[in-house]
Length: 397
Ligand code: DI6
Ligand code: FE
Image 1 (cartoon, helix red, strand yellow):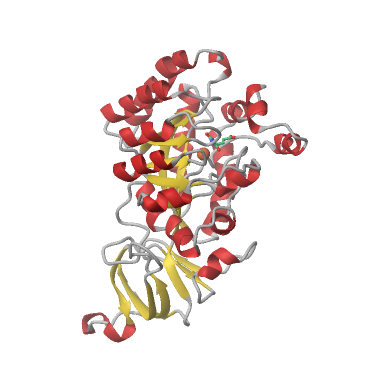
Image 2: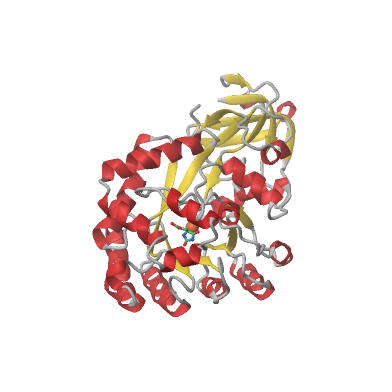
């Protein structure tokens, strides 16, 4: 396939959009084989079937590198409580929060979990998403965690999307282990990781390192187990306070540290040296009325790549719109529109350890989004407006 008459944001440079005007892209099978100015198209590709994009903008398809989009129930009631001044932490400590979604998820059939997840997946695909990371972490017992991961993997059987699954057994302490986080880690979380890995259900391992969840010592045990299985790690770190999660993640060479509002310059340096991505989640910041900004200037100074994701979940970020996340990253966190778009393409791929996605370049997967705009900044600047014209997934329109 030969795509012509395109304005291409290749996202393949270390900064900026890598724009090509009057561009063309040649795909073969599920790969990109050539990209450049139409006038430079090698003669060998001139005979391909042409699709004229009418001057539209083409970007890499979007990658949502941090979601919890498989879950049961909903938490609209907690939204109302928070509006009356009850904090996310207070709700969690009084038996609500993550644990209330755990009850609903344990009770749900796999079929019901899949159907409700697909409503969110479809919203994301409609905004040009090609790859979605999905975490477990609302089961917190062996069978329910495995159920969540199997459902997450099933999404890719019924929709044209790539799914990466992350084991988040260390998300919260379930009620049956109340007051015994260590017992939960050793008796359930780590054995279930082994079971999920044996079933081929795990691409990466994550945890929630926070006062209301697990400390760095507990997370280190989970990370040691992941390392022994050859699995990469990532961490919810420094979301509500700074307890050293980012430094821990860096010591384990984590793919990413996520949220990181309370990270500091030393944390940014450690991440820069480890090559970890900072995954910024403006939907959670917005929903929880947070005021502590992630240290964006320190990330830039330390050369830490920044990714943007929806954190789609029923509690802290009921957001299924990557385009709104793009806008929020600029408006709330002061990223440039080019940084934000890199955050949903090139750097999101890196946060998932994917080397053949997130850029428009030869040998990359042909996952592309075609937009009814001409300026890439328009994707971030509009609110509640979806200009997707078409999406190409693995070379197929
Ligand atoms: N931090 C988050 O923002 C999500 N998980 C986490 O560790 C929230 C999950 C939830 O509230 O259900
Ligand atoms: Fe999260």
